[in-house]
Length: 381
Image (cartoon, rainbow, N blue to C red; front, side, top):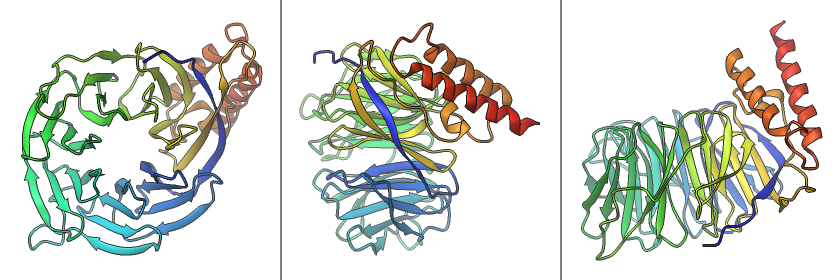
């Protein structure tokens, strides 16, 4: 892959509708619909292009932590903290089914943290705090198999484009690879020093990324088929976040990785070189639109930011516009502690001060940062 110039991203919309943290987002394959899952016990649908709310699913009795849209955009599935997985017909907005384990009213015996569709749309995979991964028949809702091996919460899942390999990340600090034909675990990777909270596979299926509580992102070679043994050592270790990385996503062309962290920043990385190319104020979760022109970011305060690519970065091009309430400009939670807000302010000043940033628009962003910090200080009086 040839390194590409860094792109500019402009905040074009802020979606407000959730009343609590947003934990997961999913985009339809046609790039028209955005789904968001929240601690407010709802899943909301949005028109990605206009930002208009389309529908709210109220079927969950506890926090909804994971959401996924099927490859054909016909089904939406969500997993919650009431141990249930529910599916809906996306075009008709109608309930399809819940997935039940044996004779219980639940899908797992503990919180559900991740759901993922197989590429052929025949199988749903779910990961839970009960330490298991469960495979479900999407047509019948029946349990196919339980995969055991993790020693703690299964926090994230991803299936490669061939549908042969499942990757799981866990609070037990490991990444595990599974053969979905034999249901056998093929590898355990233990290179992170904290929980693994996000995994993503590159569009060509040759690489995957993992984000961890140890503040790093690691890029790995992914071998599938008969050659299943990938190297035990990462291709790259990406450092730049100052807190846990909860979300990673590849751009559709596979050349850029974006990461969302609890530190209030969204980082963009050149996959070929491992270099940090740009940073935006915001947090997890993060997701690209199918055409790579839109980035969605969350979410602790119940809002979503919609970013659109602008132009290639040069000395004379504009910086991405910082917009929103004071906490959104500074990239922190609304109830963030004083020291955290002050640290975010200082970090942004270093990034956007005209003495070090000659890009057009840096001065306006610097003014927005100052005004945001002043608004924060006023509420302390």
